[in-house]
Length: 139
Image (cartoon, rainbow, N blue to C red; front, top):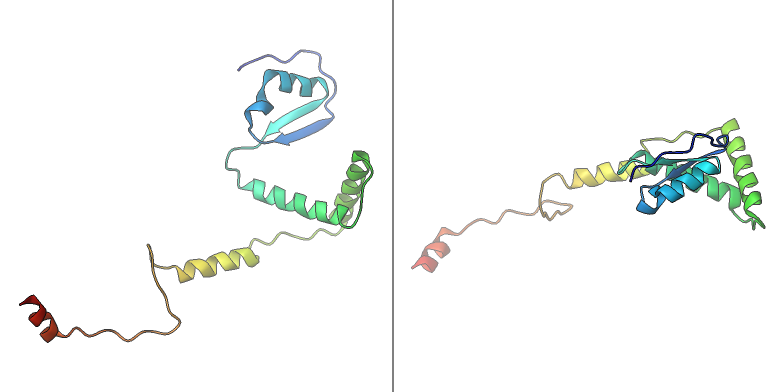
């Protein structure tokens, strides 16, 4: 549903990254956000970058809140900011060749043929066809 934003909006205070749920895009919701200085940004469907964003969020949460018991949302925000600032002083890179990727590649190597397969660690002897048994069964 198309709608127009009012001309006089407050200064932008926050960018809100949201998924594409229908309730997040209603005119009432978007107008309320904009009137409070919040700009919604919607994640693309099937965005692979979202996995990285969630990984960073998980790390920040663990580092900021591990073993702590906040008493207010403001305290949580302060802890997250302090953790992010500290991490930025000595950032640790995300390695695309990590353990998960190595496991996936190892899994693909083991599944080299398509369809259902069975594999063994050592080769099995080939069965030889006994033509005499085949001839007697056919009769």
